[in-house]
Image (cartoon, rainbow, N blue to C red; front, top):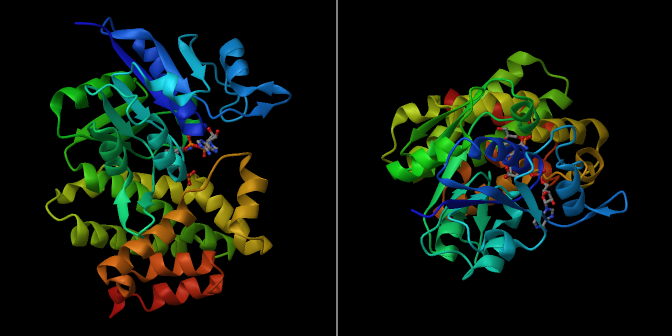
Length: 349
Ligand code: NAD
Ligand code: 13P
């Protein structure tokens, strides 16, 4: 069989971390092409193109400073060049950019390829119809798309401290290929078939993390944050039961469920920016720019996307924590009113 080629679409904080892992791992196999092409959205850093810096210094100095890629990771500014011969496409873009990137590579992707989405969020079409990002990728490229989600603050994964993730795939061979590419002694992978729910949990936990950040910013303690996490988890489970019935209930106990929710509510960017939103009174976009050095928030957009989803299904009033996060981000509600959403939650009726 010809050697399989891997492309990484995206090179932010998480994209670069996965590139570091895959670049190292791939050398262990004789079934993959050694070169891993990584699409880099071009920008100038300290007067030099980021792709040139990465290809000369083997480091993404902007989005993952202090970590070296193996030299087989090669940065491409042209996304079509990056993906055109690839058999496996790892999509690791901030979710806002997934659709437009798919449109750019449509009809340049091998018909036998498959994709894996690492992005956390939903897609809202021009007609306001809401969809899974994996469905957008799969439909526009006409290839299968699996997912990888888990408790994975990227800088910790890059540093090699122990953690785990969940791959969603109902295709045994493809699932094993993904596991082989990504698993290390410090980053353990479990494959589960509940692909849709795994992806949805990854998107929803960012909304809860924004609520956890509001609670922190308001100066409330660990009990309040635990209540945010529990009631948020209840809404996550309800959303999955309502819209994706038939999944295995144990899926919530995988890394993509409770574990990702916990790590994001303590260590994530969404939490950090949401706390600053309360403390400074600045808006979310301003804080994203000031605090994240080009990295992108997923939670506030996901909160808006979920409201579109719930409106479409006529269920907007059944998820008060999700609704409160959106209203607070949009400044239609005072952050303190988050506690009312918890106090009068259907849980206590
Ligand atoms: P990031 O937040 O570091 O985002 C910055 C990236 O977006 C940069 O590569 C930048 O060049 C790129 N970008 C900016 N404008 C663009 C455009 N118009 N088109 C294409 N790209 C553009 O990204 P990330 O941390 O790699 O996150 C990607 C996805 O992975 C997100 O959905 C996130 O939820 C998920 N994720 C992130 C982490 C984490 O800890 N960082 C962990 C797990 C999952
Ligand atoms: P943040 O985007 O809030 O940093 O969360 C990262 C993440 O998804 C951890 O698994």
